[in-house]
Length: 50
Image (cartoon, rainbow, N blue to C red; front, side):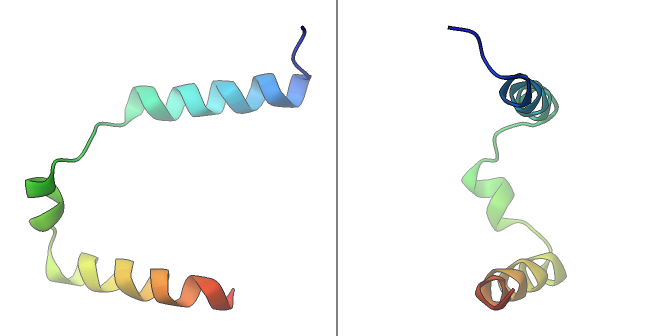
């Protein structure tokens, strides 16, 4: 079955993200600076309001 063009483009973007990313360990996640953790938490809490 042939994929629609939009699907193919989306898959290329996803594949590119996977190539550029790496898996975070629990240790890396826990060592994030406090301002970064604060900002992440605020964004998560306000995401429902957007």
